[in-house]
Image (cartoon, rainbow, N blue to C red; front, side, top):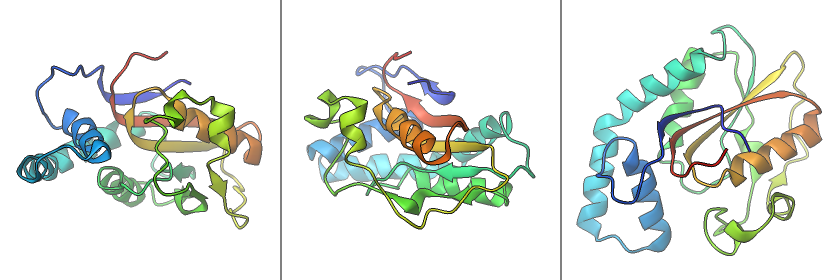
Length: 187
């Protein structure tokens, strides 16, 4: 379950809130529904005020792996929370106009989050059953690599499941994965 790059590594529970950790903290508190509304609003404002810095950092890291004219597949794991990844994808599409966004061809049932029980306890193979792939996914003629863009890497299961699926569909293909933050050391 390897991660190619992350902008910020190993944020602990006692860390303050910054442009990286706000992604993890806000996402987790939304899942647990335990953040006072004024705190959530402050975290959203922190993200919005720092979003362009994170976008630029992410874009710089992607450019270490892809040429501007390169044609590649782009996928964001299926989620109903695209608040953090959507701006990254928009800047990637502007900079890499040959990218092919495959995100809409993957879905999972509402309420399924691989980072929360019981899903966090399941194997990659079992989690595979929760990801649906549309039948009209395009062929990737001329594409040799795919970029997976995610916000938080905790256990690595989301990326691992997508890699499994992408290899099922496209065979042996080079998969690059990048996140804003990694919260645990999982190599």
